[in-house]
Image (cartoon, rainbow, N blue to C red; front, side, top):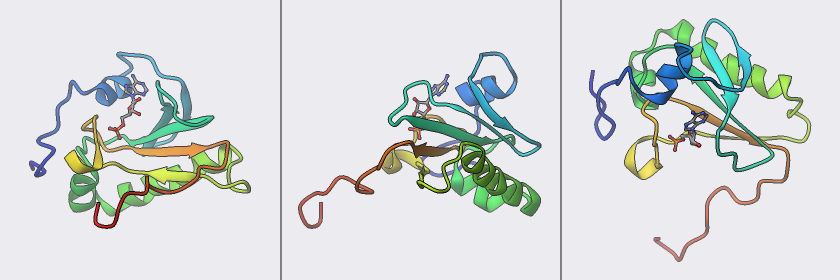
Length: 130
Ligand code: AMP
């Protein structure tokens, strides 16, 4: 089903190709529901992408259409990745971009996991209303 602002799932998107093993990734974690690998252009000492194995364009698509087991499995995998990376004590940040205003570039749902240093403010501060 198309997702407004994002479109239909494209099997040639870069993360679909990583899932099929057609292009390499630096794998951090894998289970039945999710694959996690290092971002190719890291923005923090730890910058990992966690992606569901299903063909979901975005969080809107995933939330609306994925099975409960897949949703639970995916979010448990996100927690497992952070634990495996020993980030629970210092803490970390999750970021999920959705659609144009969210800045989503790859149309396969993914969560960014950042860590390894204090990460500062959640968003850039702008003038009121900006
Ligand atoms: P987003 O803007 O939320 O869609 O984020 C897409 C992310 O995918 C960016 O942080 C890119 O650096 C990352 N990325 C793109 N291609 C690859 C790749 N081949 N391997 C790992 N990360 C990638």
